[in-house]
Length: 92
Image (cartoon, rainbow, N blue to C red; front, side, top):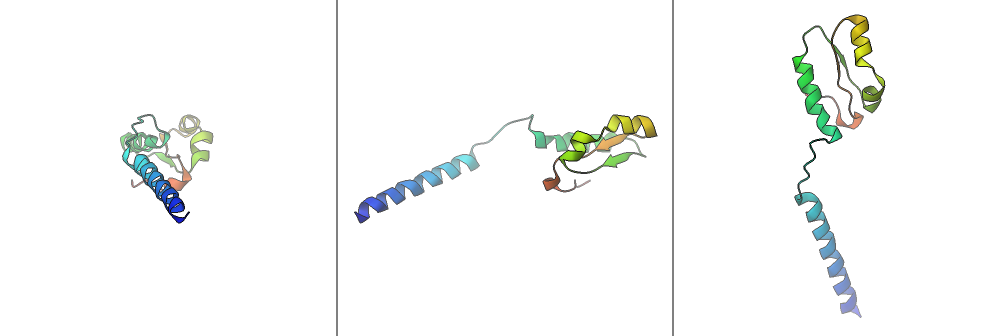
């Protein structure tokens, strides 16, 4: 009885280890991943001439701020750096 329980625990432990290793060791190549947009955003930020307007925020910023309208109204280029609030500020 005790050996049966120990065998089941060992099998469960082995499956957990294999699952964790699979998640951590298998590379995921997704060039279209949403969070990789931060690289494009930082590149655009450095390419814009000064003076410029930089909009910083979370996903509400990226989906609800119309950078083109702001740029057309004010006359300065706009860099919308919004992506995900949990990422924090860029290292610009």
